[in-house]
Image (tube, rainbow, N blue to C red):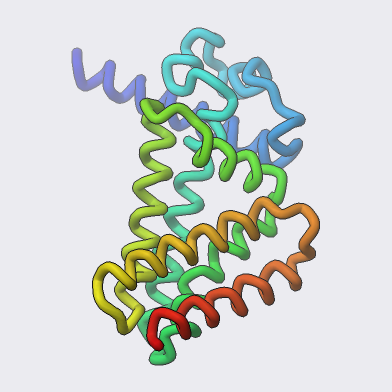
Length: 190
């Protein structure tokens, strides 16, 4: 009995994820309601709220997967590069590319990561991805542990601000992040 219940829960979660992901892509974060997601997923609104209590939690649930995949792709790319600043940029670049696909969703996701409830499990999953990103950046830097960790946090802060800046074009965003990474890496290796 428990196996069937677990499969049903997993099926509902997958339907909710697919519905939320599709609707956020089609209409953007602000153009979607939780009611529309529950209807598309073919689950009752109460059931939806057992998986994610708010629309903010739904964007976290959906975007965590894409964010984690972008970080892993960046880590793989960075391994082949010797120059620390270029390796860090190679690690960050897939996250920038992901953000360009759906800027409104990226802004909502970053806002939820920054200001969401500390107890919310989907936010905790997102914070774990940020930690993974920062650890990977720190590992690329030829500095002591503390200096590398601080530089990695600074680089994530640069990335976060660039991702939510509506005033930057994609080219300006990429250039700005690259230049700031170069500056931080030069500072930490000096």
